[in-house]
Image (cartoon, rainbow, N blue to C red; front, top):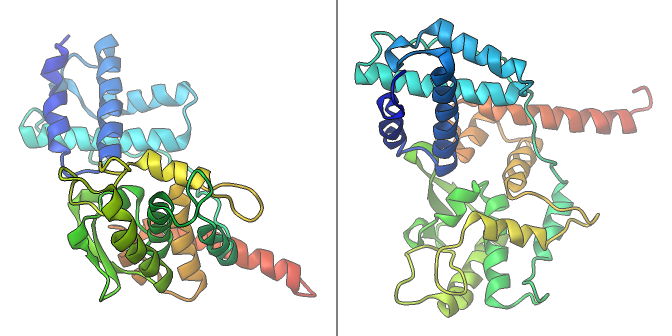
Length: 299
């Protein structure tokens, strides 16, 4: 069998430098698992990978009762890996190009009603319950941006000061694939962001602070866990809590329910493929059916 170093894992990881950190980590982990399977008899070397090997591996995942969603993601990782090996010249052809796996059922986080979302955002407070401290101002601004601009959490914590234009009511973020997009923000997000930048952030900023909008109390960069903890302290009116990414889903769903067209929502979310955005139409259709069945006398 080929040594692990001969499978070009480190080089493959470097080739993913433009991908989001979470995507890069998932792809690296998936391909490492595939290489481990090959080492146990799946293939003798990277050059021995063909479509049969790939399909055998996916079948082994199915036999382990992995979900369709997990298998689909691992197939995506393998396609990226074989594409890299082909580009490197290790493979004469790319066997992963036509590789298909059963698509997993799209699972979206709970999408609260607009009124419930607004009530939750208005109630954002610091751990001590205060609403006007730097932490409260920061957390409110971050959550308002997640919902008011539909940002990914990584885009929110990576937002730079240069990316904020309060006069034009926009923020410019770097999304997946290092793609830059400018999105509008509404008045609540604008007010929350302005309060944090003028009153809260200066109290956390140090000489070594990065040029980022959101900082910790020690002046370092805010991370995803910090945003998640802010939401864990902030409940919806019914007492339940949301995951940060659910605010992005709420943003898209509420836009569609308000009459926005799918192409516009695609651009605002930064989706490369319209089919990724179309999943939100199922949410709105389900909600419309619920309203219809509850309201129409002959439903």
